[in-house]
Length: 327
Image 1 (tube, rainbow, N blue to C red):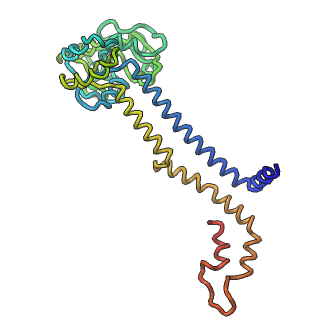
Image 2: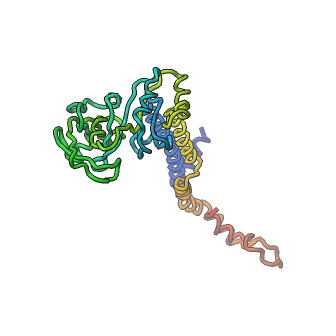
């Protein structure tokens, strides 16, 4: 008990130093906890989004880009794919919950996504205001887009050619708002839903095509073998989202490890500032504690025998007394 009492009294005697040390420890633990929580949240969100999607068919390109473009709708599609070629593989008996997608236009920078009812039914959302598209040129808006653009049920607008950039307006094709919905997942708030027929009708001078197809594979063996078979025997790119998700999670874990080992420059700068912050109070505390010692050292002079030459500066007690706060 006496040891604890003396330890507490020592800490209380140096309140500023103890406070800064406690703050540094607390901020370090908070940083580690936030990094770990961010990793787990991102991994859980990625797993939830890719649930039920075991196969992605798209144009040849980067698998990661294909997932970001067709699952998260955050990147550009690498191109379109032939409907006949895609449907040949979609007739496989182990495929279910097939979702067909077609991009083409945008409205004020928001992508207009042509899709089928399987895509709409897979969106986690609150009850829809209105209904889902039943005919060509009917759209459903996320509530966030409707509020930003001032659109309501029954309003009309026309899209611009291109997925993001305005490459020309389709003034002769007017979309009609038939529904407004509030999705639970944030990336759906940047997408306007319509039917596949709407995209094909606006681009009537081009042959109908899919941009991507997503599907669930029931058999574990087929889930393992089918993507490679499609890659070898078809001009399509077949992606296994689960494998790509593992790669993405690995990248995120590596990023967290870099932060935890202070490898990132920003984290190193922040940590350096935290480590330097208690120097001033520590120096003041040391100066007050060892004031008597400094006085004795200055009065006794350097360590030199009578008649000997003056010692080097680094052997001078006065030098050490002045440099002590820095040490």
